[in-house]
Length: 565
Image: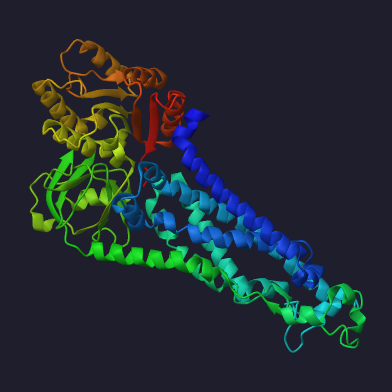
């Protein structure tokens, strides 16, 4: 347990605090509506469904306040990178912003479902009370407030319940909120995002409808309680059983009711203002001129764009959002920077795997063999750079870098920059040892990145610093013909796939052995473990980091970090 707290202690605390606030709000407001005198007569009409509708509404206000903050990437980048008080532990939590965003979204879905179901019961009870026998308490309550101050929003027996649900302000806004939420959640699944990113992108912008609906949802004031003045004049304990004498007995005047004023806007106005500022910053950045200085077509359908922008400053492992107006004026896609801060340009590598990346490949001349003039290249807009987990590689003496497929891109920037600092004896360089693992399914996936590794390998050999970087390349998929070819060239000095002196390994790493060896080589060290890859691999590495971390504060500790954007 102690080892697990090294990696997840702060995250667990944050999640428990968030869950605790949700639980407090739910329980507090449940009893306010289930036990408070103000809503005594409201409960007489609708029963316990009142509390079940209002308690999740309070939780919805809280979570809707939080949902936008994790996606204000410029705000997070400021807190993460420019605020001097932002320690490494806090930065690791900021790197999990998308995970927290998803958790908050799931909580919103849960409370929305409870809220809707409870209110459907409430509408049914309102209708039943209006149709009740004259003289009963529910019927008397339903008839109150002919000139105002009513309790039952169903004002006559002929009202259609469908009209009550769908034509009122609360009903219409509720339907809009629910439909927007359903579309955003269903289009956010991993399958949709990977195969139909444009669907996810456009439907996610329904958050505008969602928040507009939230702000106006309470204007109708459907849920009503007794006014403070009426509570003083109308003693519920004395008058509740004398409803036939209300207005006749001077001690029991007719109760007067009023609706709850809208409260949601008070919760969400701050985050909404921050997000509007975020949009303005993004727009301002998108107007700054970007010059594409070089386009390189690599094997395995990988496009490299080298660009320049006035005032652009980056750190290792950061990423940018890219928009190409010739493809879409609305879509922005994240890409890790593969250049180092020491280079005079910044670059990204784009793998041709989807509609947008395929279109970018074509408009940049990837399908053409002849040279293309710079003025014919498309206009590119860039937002960023933004900090990620890989930015913290330089904070450790020992680092383990794990990339899967195209997930190796952040480490291109890291390896370039670290080697530059290392060869120039940068006194601020803390990093002394790198363990690099790259896992790919196909041999062709190695081709575009192998040039960088070959360059690093030859430079390390020339300087006699071959121990600085230990790299292991794994091919996780191959066929029978490839296996035969590999076996025939096994004795060659360089690897048949990558051209490196370090031979490619086949299968998957034995992480238990790898972590054990690193732990024995670096006792009393904090080892940073960085992954850009699938969630399944993240679970394994996170588990290994906890299992091989020492319970002794003076021992070795593996600190797990994962790219999220």
